[in-house]
Structures are given as C-alpha cells and as structure tokens.
Length: 185
Image (cartoon, rainbow, N blue to C red; front, side, top):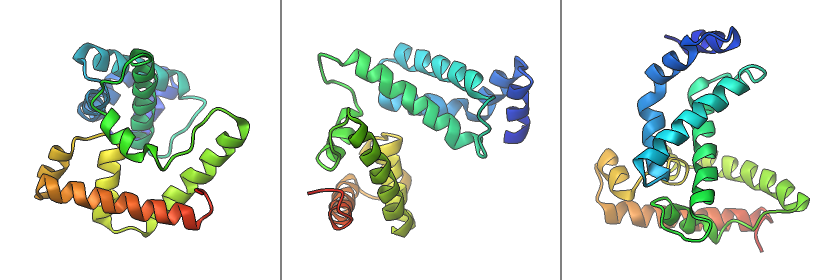
C-alpha cells in the first residue's frame, strides 16, 4: 500500500491504518527502536507508543513522506524512553553514538538554546547536503538510526576500523563547519 493511502486511512480513523503502517514500516521501526533500547520489551513498547503517537498526530499533521515522519516519531519516543530509563545510569547501546556527538552540541533548556538548536539543525542539514553520499549515509546510520559501527561497516563492505576513522573525520569536519558558522566557540 502506498504512503498516501496509509495516510488517508489515518485521516479517516480506520483501524487498518496501524496494520498497514506496520506492514509497510514495521521492520524498520522495530530495528530503529532496538538500536536505541537494549531491552526487547522496551523497544516493542516504544513501537506501540510511536504508533499511537502517529495515530494521534495524523490529522492534523499531513506528512509529505510517511517513512521519515514515522522514523522521527519512533526516534523521539525512544529517546524519551531512554532518558526515563537511564536517568540515573548510562548503559544504552546508543549512548556511544550520542557521546561521539556530545562535544559538538551545546546544552539545552533555555529559550535561547532552543533557538540555537534550530540554527544548529539547519547548519547540520547544510553540512550534510554538501557532503558526499557515503558520508551522509555513514552519518545518518550512526547518529540518526544509532546503528552499530559493525552493521554500518557490513552494509558498506568496509572494515569497522575504516568506518570508525571516517566517522571521526566527518565529526571533525562538522566541528570545523559549525565553528566557521559561528555556532561553536
């Protein structure tokens, strides 16, 4: 079933909408949730919560592309659940990926930093737009989908060390770019 048809099912509040969404993107959504959450039950709960969030958000939202929209919802649900689960401890598999970027990203919490986050997001988008396909692929798989380096290496037919080095170089270029844009000091 096409994305537009699935979105139409959501608009008409058809119970089939979740079934069709799961049929189309269930495997991707579950993989994304497992990349963020170590426990299979937590990941499955996050998927259910994400499907409910999509149900509640369409309408009024009308995503142009359903796949990235659903992935963003799942990712946000997983990050919120991860924060809740690891409030006192840090033991998630995606902590390593987030830690790699942590030094580039400013702390949040204020209105000013929320505005800065939008500027930072736009700058990262511009950086990725100018990057090669492979660099974008590496960056998104590691830092958006939180895929393990070993899986990325396997998918690209590269060694894990080579992927680690490339990710390090991408982070360095991103750091230099953000500094040049005046978003880092």
